[in-house]
Image (cartoon, rainbow, N blue to C red; front, side, top):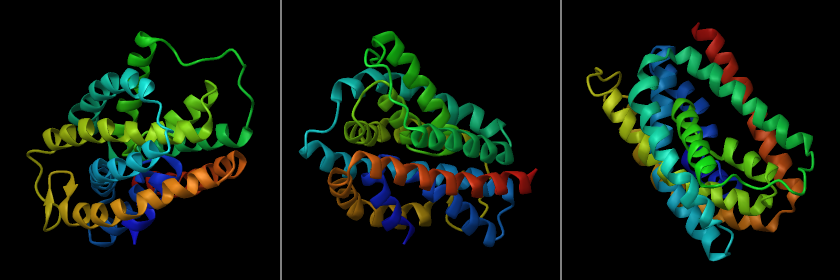
Length: 260
């Protein structure tokens, strides 16, 4: 069920599904006896790994509608790869799981607020040039690696703020999910190499049974979410995005404070 819901939201909102999966996987792993700090980290890493599969299915559907800004993908992806590896292989292992949950809640809340404010950007504002996109991509990759999300919670508001239409921003964010997931998953594998399995089927920070089931279910629903996104008007899409983000931020805030 989590994979089906995550796949649909990945196609609908370009968020990779991680914002839904991280809180729920944190709850599931906690119920199975994993201590709270490690449960957050495992949920983040496992969620990110599923995005490798979900993003490919989602972006294929968006590309058929000509909605992906491939020029922005090419500009942002190199920085994303660098930032993602730094997060997954370095900072992720050093930070406490409770602080990761609080970072997740803070940035998701900020993104939701920006979407609900619906302030019209200055007409002259455009995406940064090559150097700016490289740096922006590194920041996106780093942040996504720390919270286990596909980047849509940052990249969609950013692109909309730079006058990219919201439907194109969602589609482009879905395409960015693949390099984000590849870089960070490799980093998690390196960072968790010597970690003792917390559960049967766990490998480092990855919980492989959940990864397999969620990925298999999510790829079937991502194209349906993409079709739904193109059928919705801009106001509906923004409200749906913001409502989901606020709900998930509240849960992760609770988990983070509980684990301190």
